[in-house]
Length: 189
Image 1 (cartoon, rainbow, N blue to C red):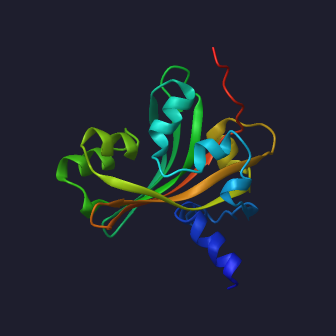
Image 2 (cartoon, rainbow, N blue to C red):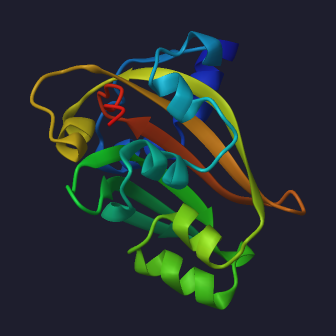
């Protein structure tokens, strides 16, 4: 496998696990260097912050989780999700997350498995110190999965990132693929 193909494959995991489980083929993906990411995607993706509060600030609304699918394998929870705004129920993120359940307290683990809240909300509410480290950025063609999650009719180019959340000891809490819908800058009103 060439270095570029390896980078793309690692960047799209854990979303690729859901494509593998359904037999679907991943859409066309291209690596995008952070500084070359178009706005508003650069501002929303190219940083070391959690996406939930970033999207809440951008939309000026609270965010909730819509669980699309989940897989459990040997203490690891894979979730395919959409994050939507509380007030307008607009989807603001589609993606997948691989969560290492053994690295969480019983209370946090229970909430994670229930699948009602974004992981970022649980981390914040439980005071779980962590770091957020994006490992790459990409553009991806929309397909049936992303069009369904975002309510899109036409094909379009989407932008996203692969991010690793780690605890203070460096243990990986989660790996996440975060893809944003077509966006425009919000009005400054």
